[in-house]
Length: 403
Image (cartoon, rainbow, N blue to C red; front, side, top):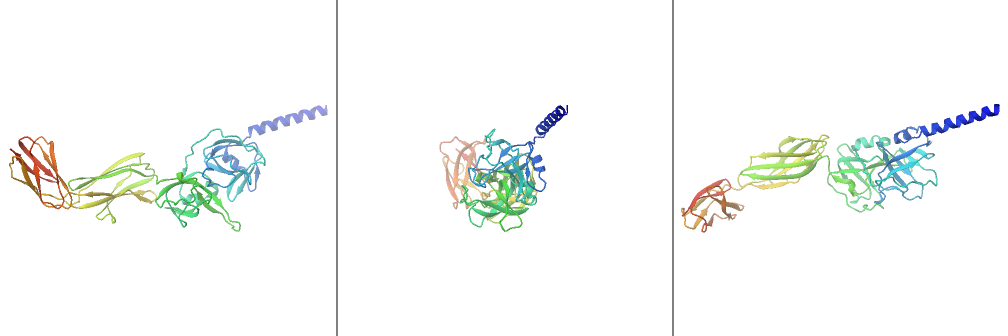
């Protein structure tokens, strides 16, 4: 009887153990990380499900590692010294990590599979991951939280000491700066970085020198595709037209996520600019704006540009538009009336001007160029009907009668 009771008890306990193991399977990466206290943890029943964000094709990733992002956090999967790469960017994976080691290495979490582990094929390919917007200050002030998470740093610029991506360079935004590191074996290591203010996508890895007591945050881009024109703002078009002595500015934008306002700037020489006015950002996905400047004089030249200012205080400029305002030309015609040819007389201008001949119903029947530096031009009216016509150029006009 005692033997049967013992057997029954063992059966019950075994059943309970199996049920508990199954019901306690961990599939959330944050829950896995929470198991870590102060030393390496052997994971219980657990599955690592996420998307690979590290790019092995462009080779700017540590040997034998893959970065997995899931549920707003990330972890490094370390295959072991001497092991090759198993996964590439965009691979969606479900990996049984039961019995694998979870450790905190240089202030970031790392999962080390059991030696000899076999890794399943991805369940999907080319899965996109949306990077988390962040500043350099926030990124570097909580390295454990943000380590290896795919992020985007808006309005940042690289200051290179080597004129190439290779090695350590400086990446800075309006909140601070940090090292951006590229391995010498990466496919773009010898490329020169852009000096423009751009948006940088990538992740923060953590480096610790052998003799160092503290870690150094380093930003890693996976390829030059991770460098994009500065967001949140993108100038889609910027144009300036003239109407008399008035400049008509128009521009279109996209991605106004954090844009505060636009400052309209004007210059007379193309190098020095002063603010004319400002326009508040509409903050929509696609936006259109216009502004007019009537302060110009006949015969003058003006240069316009737009300065977009972020809510963080950072800014960038549009391209520069040059416009020329036609000189005021007093025009007359002689002989008038005429049977075929009349001579137009006007004040010399520093630029070519167009004189249009309009019928009484406003249709353009002919036009002639008034060359820069000239004061007279012969106008041939042979072949057009008899009647009264208007010769119009710039902001002046004269009446001509064709007999």
